[in-house]
Image (cartoon, rainbow, N blue to C red; front, side, top):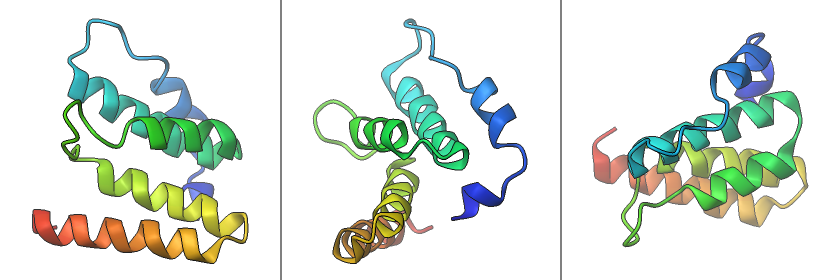
Length: 103
């Protein structure tokens, strides 16, 4: 629910428009995760969920440095929809990822 408390969600969304096609893959995915989190703040969980799910990993299945944030966003969406099991799974995956990364 943190993103709902940010008064700048609209300006964040303005800053994170569609990334240029010539961005490297990792930067495109990071950009899209930030867009997804901003969509949560604006109340568009459908768009947010799609961006967060589609941009969690790099090609080859590698985690992205912002994968944990995407998972926490998905947990937030699941809680909002009353899907506690999905929220718990996503939050646990995020915690494990952060622990592996030493964050």
